[in-house]
Image (cartoon, rainbow, N blue to C red; front, top):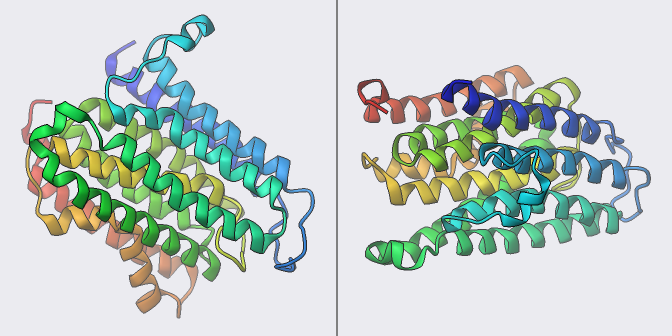
Length: 313
């Protein structure tokens, strides 16, 4: 098997297939159009849990496969992180499962919304703290850590609110495309500066592909934040995209303008702003086109500045 084919299968195809199956299970739960905010919903919890778990398995399986131990369970306990950011291999899938469990435990929509928002904020702070603290390896860049921590936490907060805003305004059918676009931009940066981190962003890309395909076919509506069916997968992916973007900033082979890095970091928020200003008076296809133009512009700017076709990687 060639190296390129191995990356394709391990980092994109496997997570995408698991995401297709997991998100399909998520999409089969009641859309909730007639839910009362303060009354428990029934019959969605465990299906949500299993759907999120399958997506999580795809992400973890991708890493184990890349390490060559996927079919050697006795070696799984020997897993080690060479760098702090690699803990995302367990933290992001774990957060997907956690959000699903929160939905099982707090079946009343308004209670689930409050707990999911709290869990997302706490998790974002935790994962950024863990992944951005490389100790002595980053001593020469220590002055950048706190600003990037603050910017990343703000990005997670605004991006999560933006994804929820899009989903609640009849955009849940295509909201995962925004996350897919963000991962595309992050991968364009990371693959040129830090290959192993770039490969990990491809895992997020693969899961986003599955979520986007299922979302486009199924769709849903939600009255509350986190009430849309794929939120338990897409929201953790949003945290992962911000974390990968922040980490890649410490390994840039070719510095990018701050406005462009910020555009990638806050891309779902920017898409939401354009959607609010220009899109919501029109149909879904027009809104998707606007989102695609915004994401394509940012990706095109990255490629135009870095010119990867001229490099030898």
